[in-house]
Each structure stands twice: as C-alpha cells, then as structure tokens.
Amino acid sequence: MTTWFVLALLIALSVFAILLYNGLVKKRQMVEEGWSGIDVQLKRRANLIPNLVETVKGYASHEQETLDAVTKLRSQVSSLPRDDVAGRAKAEGALSQALGRLFAVAEAYPDLKASQNYSELHQSLDETEDAIQMARRYYNGAVRALNVAVESFPSNLIANQFKFVKAEYFEIEDEAERAVPKVQF
Image (cartoon, rainbow, N blue to C red; front, side, top):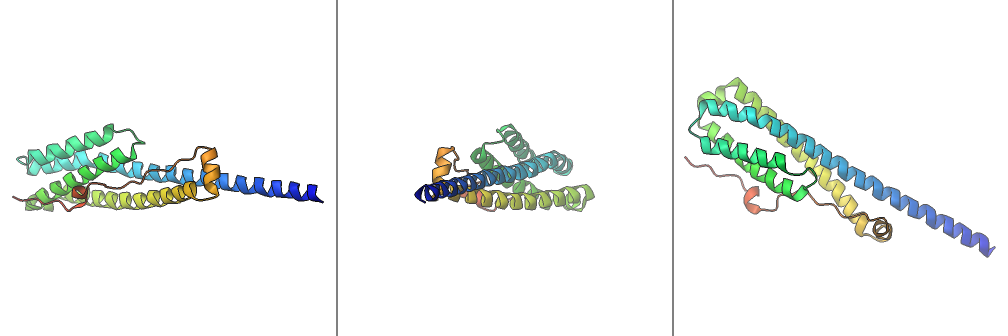
C-alpha cells in the first residue's frame, strides 16, 4: 500500500514539475514573440523615416539640424543588437523625441502640411507608433508573466534548475525622453 502511495506521489510530482516547466517555456516563447512584434514595428518605423526626412527636407532645408538628428538617431537604432532591450528602449525614446521635433518643424510650413506625400507619411508613422505601443504592451505583459513565474514558488524551483531568467521590460527610463518635446522658433 505505501509503495503505491509513494509511486503515485512521485508520478504526481513529476507531472506537476513537467507542467511548471512547460508553463515557463510557454511564457519565455511569449516574451520572444512579443519582442519580435516590437522589432517588426520598429523596423517599419525606421523604413518610413528616410522618406519623411526627404519630404520635409524639400520644404524646410534650413532645418538641417533637426533632419540630421533624426537621421543620426535612426542609424544608431539600426546598429544596436536586436536583443539589447535596454539599449533599444533608450535609443528609440530619443528617436521618438527627435521625430516629435521634426513634426513640430513641419507644422510651421503650411505647404508641407498640405502635401499629400507628407500627409500619407505622417499617417503611416502615426499608425506605426500606435502599433509599437500595442506591441510594447504585449511584450511587457509577457515579460511580467515570465518574471512572476521565475520568482514565484514553486515554479522558481524549476526555473532555477533549468536556468530560466527574468526578462527586461521595454520602457523609457529617462524622464526627459518621456516628456513632450518643446520646439521654439
């Protein structure tokens, strides 16, 4: 009788450990899927930026400093490793701020605002920014789920055994980057 009980207990513990392990694997995959979604949207934004810069350049060539800043930041973002979450978050925050300044510059040029090409690019960029925010929320939710599982008992026992680690949130850490950019003429 005790042998059957011990055997049943071992089987139950094994099944429980397998379920915990599989849950951790699923959460890690969701984090990777979330990061992939952010990466796709960031690449989409990076591909739109040169067209936007060229369009604005035709109307506001004397705003070269703003145009150069956007181009430089886009290059920096593109050169960062794909899995550098903190570095990408910081660089993307700076790029977003520079794009805000670029849009503020564009507001000063009525002909540019009336340009269909500019309007379409601006709308595409707005849609992309919205998609980035949705992807970021999904990713951060997946990170939260993984991190809770990695730190919670009893799943932390399995996580430590199989080297599951906490993931980094995709967030802007510098308060200045969170602020709405101020542009003065």
